[in-house]
Image (cartoon, rainbow, N blue to C red):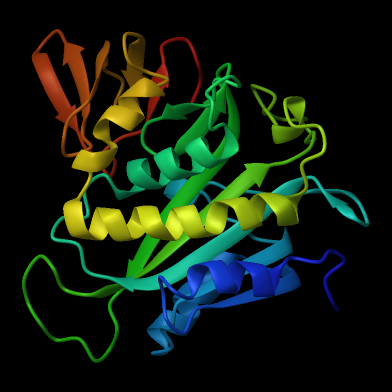
Length: 273
């Protein structure tokens, strides 16, 4: 079954190919998960740079195994944008990558900051404490790679889901935010075309320089800084922002804790996990 929208594949490829030689764009009507598909390919040894976008995911995934369901408002107007970017990458330190990706996406969706798109550590975009977008990062080690050290090339898969239009909120503790609340004419293909090249550039800056170039930009949109937060291990503390390595800094009764994203989840106190 073909896609119901024109996804500007040639336009996106032309913008990104100078940054990533051999880059291609694939659009499909339905798939289990764009991240799952690119990880399958990587494990089979197929690791070219690619952007895979799906109009509908039947088994979309978020962080910690949570589901991400795409939605569709009508035959020609997708209510969500779900895609994955895959490319080989070899940064010296992977810490803070999801934060750098979040900065890039937030700045593309809300360049002026007027919509107050915030970044909720480590992988969500929020508007007024409601989730607008989520990020899932996975990596696979190509079979041919046998080198050792921190800068070993891996195949990076960045999955992004963005609410473009209103979403069904049944069963959710907090209704989601959506892009058309401040950009009424936004469409998923147009948003993808806006995001793709800046996202690739940001990932390449991260590869070369780490999280440091993104730290102040993240701080400007930090949705948790200065708020009392609860960690998924049950502890509480005051969020003091993000460190230069991307760790969350939480002041607890035991002192300042540096929390990495693979350890716990975090919410403002009073919000359920």
